[in-house]
Amino acid sequence: MQPIVSAAAVLVSLVVAASAAAAEPLVIEIWPGKVPDENGNIGAERFRMSPALDRKQVEVTEPTRMITDVTKPTLTIYRPTKEKESGTAILICPGGGYWNLYWQLEGEEVAEWLNSIGVTGIILKYRVPRRSDEPQGEPARRPLQDAQRAVSLVRSRAGEWGIGRIGIVGFSAGGHLAIATATSFDKRTYEPIDDVDKISCRPDFAIPVYSGYLKAKDKDELASGLRIPSGTPPIFLAHGGDDIISPPENSVLMYLALKRAGVPAELHVYAGAAHDFGVRKSDHPCSTWTESCANWLRNQGFLPTNKKE
Image (tube, rainbow, N blue to C red):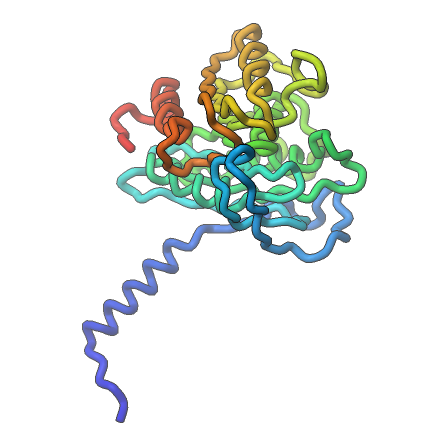
């Protein structure tokens, strides 16, 4: 005998299914056709779990989901609720040493936080791991191509998506990518391929968090390849004071260079904090960086002052 299902139950099921479908983020490829500077012979894209590390190395010690073997860069777009929508979007660059992307900790969780303050979170799935012609210990070059294209692409869809301000946030290697994107807007790193590339790739602001690759080796100066041109947007930096993976000097030296260049910048270094704290809440003061950042965004005019977390 078949169970009797009420019309109300059917309606509820349909509403739940529709809500789940509506919540699914939009995913778009950032390159039309062939991806530049890419031979695509590294195998299929895959998820893997991050290594379990101890508290001397990272704040979040349990394994989280990562993505690697990326040859088709994409944008995954998470929109806030209509009542919270601020008109600001932030491109998210997960870290992973240019080998992997910490997709859960520094991607999805970041998008959720941004949505909570009325910001559209757009995760950039850039190319990893570094290719054979991208030496270990140096920033990989292809991710910057992906990030520059991504900023232009989001700008090209800004009217459609109701976006007026576009920033970029990155973590660890992704923090370097955020800085590189914010300071190389006047020099595209690939040959333009269509009308999207005629649109500015300058973000309106940048938020590098426990960034690597900013400091020159054995020198208290910025790494070669980094410069701060006129027009560099405002920058908010956050770092752990006890970070042994990407020491805080990376952010300190960048802050000093920005200040000398007259770029509006704010720096937060959290005593006793290690690497990889993402946006997770904890009893450590480093987990309050998101509140400071939201206040900075409001002060800079990138979020309405009447929007509360």
